[in-house]
Image (cartoon, rainbow, N blue to C red; front, top):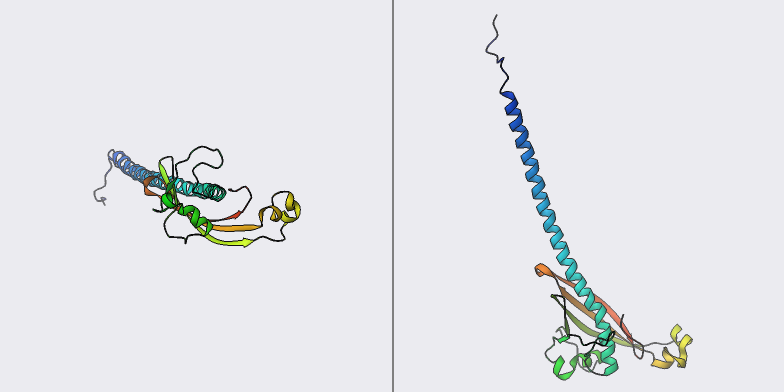
Length: 195
């Protein structure tokens, strides 16, 4: 009995296998490219958000120095408390520049408002900080009182008053990224201030 038609010539099978292998490798390459593109976008977004966070964080660290300077001068601060050089402070609250309301809000002479009080330009990005006076407390019986007394820093020298402030700092970054950092600051009157 004779077998039905069977190919004895397999010369064209190599090209079919090669084409299937090329299609498979092309699909792997397309998948790798898509994954790489997605990873690059994730890294770009992460960088933008980190820049915005660090901008907001810088507002939290610089504002206590301005609070201390404002309280010591009994006016809005005009210079950087650490280096003595002029800084670019924008009083965002419309009343701040004309009536020293930043100082008045710090001291509790004027009610806190919802407006952001101070703005900075750091690099190409903006930082805006809202400072809200929380409360004032008398400090008694602390280690500073015992250790310093009337000779220096402590309750005997400063009157023992601490003023607490809440800060809401918003920083901007590339690609419209924003970040908010909330912090509290305690200013002990008569002591060197800032973080």
